[in-house]
Image 1 (cartoon, helix red, strand yellow):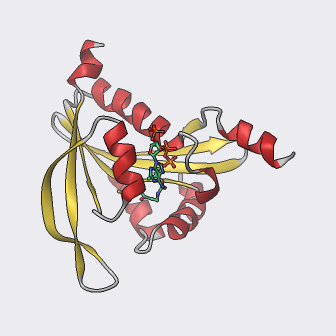
Image 2 (cartoon, helix red, strand yellow; image 1 turned 180 degrees about the horizontal axis):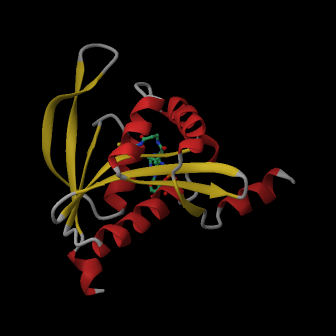
Length: 164
Ligand SMILES: CC(C)(COP(=O)(O)OP(=O)(O)OC[C@H]1O[C@@H](n2cnc3c(N)ncnc32)[C@H](O)[C@@H]1OP(=O)(O)O)[C@@H](O)C(=O)NCCC(=O)NCCS
């Protein structure tokens, strides 16, 4: 397959599957490629054991990305999302989030919350494009190369999904 046809293929919506134990090595490897301070395999396993919503996005046989969401009373908390580097910029992150909005709304959530590093321009752009706004800052939330980095707290109201 040529590079151009690969790029076309990547623009198709991925298929979403529940994350399973057998996915964890691949998920942890993807995470390690995109994060300076990655979640460990054990953390992903803990998320599965805790019953968090955990999805794997696949494009054919390729692991395109994943999303992990914790469901609470009237709110859902996005714990992690990532897209494989070679598949970024083709709408997979937006697609995963939109599926999560629909699922969270169906569970009765009225807003979605998340934290993000102020330095993570790609993620902040994705979140803003998907209707999130900054509502606060958690001091020294993340480990950093030197000291700690604050976390920006973002929220997205889901009521519109209910009314749509
Ligand atoms: C953040 C991340 C999930 C985005 O996934 P993606 O599939 O590349 O995002 P999309 O292709 O759906 O892009 C969504 C929007 O963000 C924008 N965007 C994506 N990457 C960007 C970048 N590097 N710089 C600026 N904007 C960017 C896109 O332009 C798009 O906006 P548009 O709808 O106006 O075109 C991906 O970059 C990633 O895995 N990063 C590493 C892990 C991470 O940071 N996770 C978030 C932790 S809080």
